[in-house]
Structures are given as C-alpha cells and as structure tokens.
Image 1: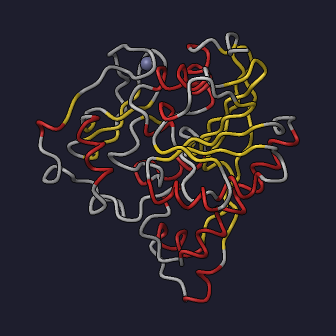
Image 2: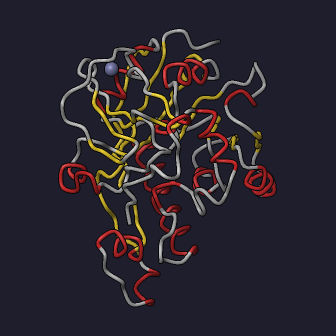
Length: 297
Ligand SMILES: [Zn+2]
C-alpha cells in the first residue's frame, strides 16, 4: 500500500527544496507526481527525476537509524511483504545469480569485487565462483558481522570506511544510488577505489520504463522519502559522464519477486502456499557499468 500523505509525519522544517542533484539547475518540467509534502519532479535540463521537496539529509539519516520508521527496509521494495523471509532471500539470491551471469557474459567478472551496501551478503555469496577476493561495506553493524562470519572482508560504513589505498577490479552497488543525495560526489569517491581497468556497476530501479508508464504514481519503486533520485539509462549515463567516464555498458537486470509481494502490489491476497514461489519480472531495474579515465594505478 502506498501512503501518499506524509505531512503529519514530516514537518516542513525537516524539508528542503533542492536544485537538480545531477546538473545543479532549478528549472523543472510541468509533469510532477505528488506525495504530500513531497513530490517527484523532473529536471527540464538533464531530465533526471528527483524528490523535491525532500527530507533534509540529516533527518533522513536519523530516520534510517530509527527502525520504527522503515521496519524491514531492504532492497527491491521487499519490506512489509506478506511473502516469507525465506522466499524473499531466495528471490534475491536468484536475482543476483542471474545478474552475475550477465556480468560474466560481458567480461565484467574476475579479480577483486567490492559491494557497497552488501546487506546480508546475498550477492557476495553468489559471486564466489566469479571473483578471487570478495569484500563488502554496510552501515548496519549486524549485517557487517554476519558477512564477516561468512568469510568475506567487511567494512562498517560507506565508501569512507575503506582504506585509502584499497583498489578493486569491480565495484558494484545495487539499490544504493537512488538513496544518494549528492550522486556526483559519490561516484567520484567510489571511482578512486577502482583499478586502472576497473568497472563501477550501479543497479537501480528503471524509471521511464514499462512498469513506470503502466503504474504511474503507483510505481512500486517510489519509496518516499528514501529514494531521492530516479534514473533511466540516459540520466545514469550522464552521471557517469560528469565523473570522467570513458565507456559504459548496459546490463539487463531481470529480478525475481516473491509471488506474495506481487499479490500485495496488485491488492490480491494469495493462498499461503503460493507465497513461497517467485516470478521473474524484466526491466523493473537495470544496471550500467562504467570505466573511468583517471582510475588510480
Ligand atoms: Zn538536471
């Protein structure tokens, strides 16, 4: 269920009305989607969809630290699903398995991998056959301890938690960039941890795709107020270009979703036995890989 009025939850002094987080301009296209007191607007210059007004970043960080705000959180909008946790975990593992296969097909595996926002390590687990060295970061101390116990190197925090000299052949972040308030700063910080031939791969919900045009305001990736930017391949490509990118590659990202969650989105309560199954949906998300001109050594 999409809640569309947050006015009582978030007072106006906790809001700001930002310039476009990608190109820094103010002009917006007339089409806007309203989730009072928030709105998703589109930059008239670079076409990025972004949240404006949005929650102040300081207030957002406080909300993330308070589990009562976003109980269950998590990637791909699985929060509050009627499907079981196991079904969700299996769907995620299958999604990552397919994603890694797609990376391998494009020559984007091998060497060392860093995952930003590694959660409970579902992607890292599936990545074992494809990389020699596997590391992850996460802001959640319980998640970090969990992935350490699985034998992965783990850092508590964001990109700042990495040792200055740490370099990786591949850095991947799924379901992260849409939460980032200053995406250009973020990519510039991350690319400093790539080897000279290294690739950054961001996967994110795909706005302007089939599901968005079908569902409009009910699009399931409108996670308000956590998602502050919404990309398609053009705007994500533009983000990379602003950070000195040499080359990008589009990577399909079909995602498996538990049937219980899909039923919930459609307003249908499914029999319990069905909720253990999942279904592949194309183009809910996409990934774009980028190589940069000034990656260190
Ligand atoms: Zn813009």
